[in-house]
Image (cartoon, rainbow, N blue to C red; front, side):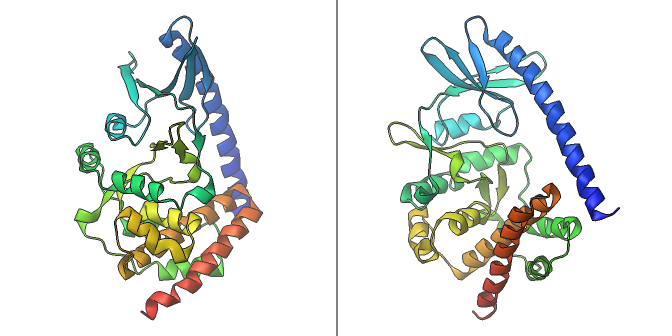
Length: 293
């Protein structure tokens, strides 16, 4: 199939999927209002899943979500997410959770280099209870070899930077099994919420997985923290910026850039695709530093 036709079909499929999701979300909203009872007003809270709502009754305001992360209670107990108020199971097996509503704001990109961000991420990565629960649920660590294989099979187009990056990525980083942690996997600044008491939370845990902590650290450091401040930021996180860790940061950031390239190529977003191709080229150039060390 020609690449243009393939992309067009994928975009058409995506439009159909979104239409079906929106229709299902509308019906779910109606059933949620029935579940909450008389007097509660629900409105969508946004998000990719369409499963989150803001529920209001008089002066009461709570955050409702269908089939949220099963370890939400642990996240709440450790102060990582807003307080869990209750959990209820519907007859169809769906689980509804209610959390305290936070009158707060998203962190700005310029605030992501703050020590409190490093400290909260360290709390998450150091949580043995969170890791034990994840393992009991049968979650296996994300394998770098599997990531590399997927990229080699699924690249949308050939670009010099992409081909060179895939070649360099063959030197897969090694990490002892005891160093795997629960990673959030989407540490974008709009998932960090500050409440009116300056408390900090990391929300939206639907994509969490057991992995190398560099999976979270790479997009955060490369995306928000000036390189000459990395060592200091890592001190607040509680780790040293070793040569091994710097390579793992480079490796996962390169993988993530390739993800962005492929996604925007499929969506036909040429400007965004070019942006991430340029970031990939920069990382390819940076790779020469590791070979000289």
